[in-house]
Image (cartoon, rainbow over all chains, first blue to last red; front, side):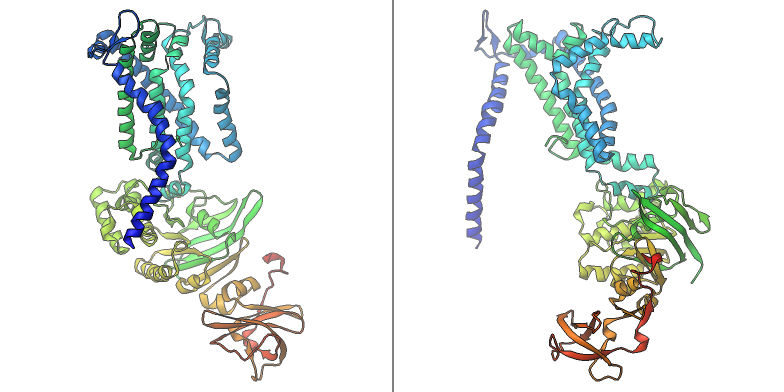
Length: 292
Length: 331
């Protein structure tokens, strides 16, 4: 009896493995191997003229510790924190209330965040240039309302980059929060009110606590890309704001120093996986809310 | 009836232009176990939610101990609810769930601990304080939900089909437990169910609701033996409804007599018979086309479909009722 069970079980399992092979092949070819290659590359040297020298070195990592690059990491982290903070500030209420709306309004609110996806991200960023540039749309509105007297010269400033980042990352936060708020059982809030909690207290002790996985998932999903969205910093920040992503891109294209770019990427990846680890630890779940 | 603790006066409520409560009047006595009985959609849950403050009535008043609480927020009423799906907070363990109401009211920690322990003992789950709700069985969740509500010592405890999700055996056991608990605590219970047996077993009084109207309010005996409307007779007593000379009568199936007894003067044809729950049920058709059901204990297999028999009933068992299909007020 037990024996037959085991064989049938193992047969079923081997059948599953057969079906999974394409997935493993795909993952190994396109995810595992490139990452391995990246880490390998980060321990090699840049060749004098073109390509890489196959000599082992830790210099690339030492170089990251130079004040110039440490500062770049610090600036990137700061910008990522700032952007993520505003993304959460706007995205959480939006996603939360979207989940509470009736079907019609839900569709409308969802459409509002989906429409921008139908246009190229680059074109949308150039739209922001029109808004921010001197005597641009924003200046005209503010001066028209007599709120400001001269153009604000917002383009190529830190706030412009933050706005661009927040704008690009907001949908991730909204969808993550929405997905966890959607699952929130309304009777739990009623139970809390019934047991003596004010509306605010009920939100804080029940609704917020139960949508926290969504918020944290949104934080992870905004924070990680914001470290690498160099083109936003380039387009809206001019060359004043340099992010890790920008350095990596420059090292590959202009600097032709692939090993150093690989080392920077490796550090970025390690930071990212630490964040995901933290998320898992806090929420006790392995999957990011809003992603599948 | 003792001192009145809760009153509903002419409560009305509509959702999307459909009137679900059409003027509910109810007076509940201190310490009473009252059941609102009715099929789904009759308005019983809405009534309960209005008492809890989770819904506001369009018209009418809710009065608790002489005070008008109609528009008071749910957290400012001395009323607690046991929800149908239990609504235990999934992110808190059993102790934190039970102590939630006290913590919100900033009761000292030591006292919360003591009372939580007491409440868990009351529902016989002392050992379960550290468990999370998803580690409990349905019956255990039910008990925790009750403990979480009664720990606040509400003036009135509202129970919304609390046993609906449990299996029959557990439900019977919990009925007895709940009744015992209510006696012990002396708290007024307003209980909602669609199960007439449950209502009869537990209640001091039953209010039968039908399409937004409280059709009849009375003791289980009154509702069972003296139904006032054809709906109540049918819903509570599974009675036969017969029309004769413009009047409507309700006769419960066990009171239909047949063969040989002096009152058996009516001709009837056996249409079909079936055996269920230790009872034989026989469907008869009267010459005027009306049908009625008789029930007997045991398998009485003398009768065959198509057979003609004489049936009848004692005059006292034919209760005159208002016909819901004809009376405008009860439609």
